[in-house]
Picture 1 (spheres, rainbow, N blue to C red):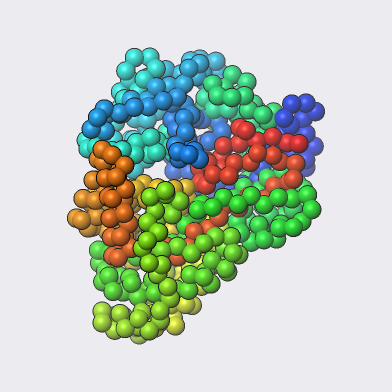
Picture 2: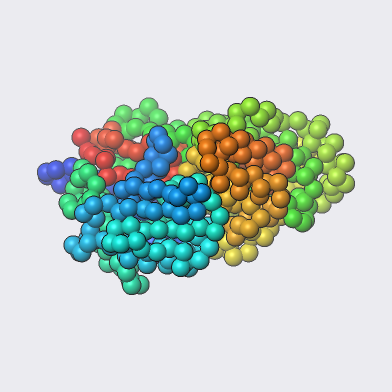
Length: 487
């Protein structure tokens, strides 16, 4: 069945009772389809489906920023090296069988084996164990205050021993009724352990371009264009029958500058590039004004984000002077590698390259296909773009992307003082110590880290005015559609 036929079918699939059927469009590529909830999931469309069919232990919350999901509660020992999660009462799989601690342990161990410590923060799979029928224990090699936050993503539970995910037997608020070429129909799970979902069904359609996704919601073929980007938001603003949902501090389109070796190993060169960019122009042009200038620190939505650090501004004279001090070869052209993954990512690279030329730095933008990018460029190249969401924790990014031991250290950053402050934050026994360590690691990142974080974009959803109670949290939070309904 072609995309047009699927959309036509979806347009006719309004349920006559209950909460109705929400038609959602999301970005993806048919060549990148993935139904395994523990694998690398490149398609936004697949991640949306997986997030509604399966439950993570925790999910993003408003205040505090972690809310219960499959885990109803959690607690740690005094030194934060042992965390116990209690599973939700009456949690059942879609086939009616009860969820057991053994199912969760098997799932989390599988996630650790596939995704490594960055996805499941224990030293080895055996550090995850059951404690009775409804408790799961994570034993850690070092204190970690952030375990509830770190289990918000990808800790999806499947039935013990599952290796075929085409049937998608999960525990989440919706059941998979059909899946074809990335397009899916989900129906309400009336036996979900949480509050009853309001919608009868959700139909997810994969779109391979932002333009096609935007046109579909403007034309009324779908009810919700998920994470469609700023340009589509600006186009839809003020149109009758449509609403634009803005999720602040949602997406960081940043540059990763390799600190270990190569042309950006000198901190003066990294500082020069940071001073060469025009952050206001980037926010205006790339985010269409749907965002805010950032200060080279990841995690801007964190309550502990240090707003006392001076905002870095454009200074071309200082940038040129730093390049000269570092002996940087301004006669050479350097590659800035990017990929068409997040809305505005390629555009941001091109604009940064144009701005850097004014400081004497010659950057050539190279656009790679995603597979090539992650096989060859990511973690290796001197300079490339990255995109991250759910920016509500500076410590999350510090511990996942910047400590020396990280397997996802995008900037090859090795800084003993930064490692020590991150460890201190993870081990903090009180709020004052946690705040002090978080501020210290932010200052190090600002002074000599490897990221250029020029702005934070709002997440943009465009929806029919009939759609009510859409989630407003950033990142993974936008997948939580169980409270959404149609007027």
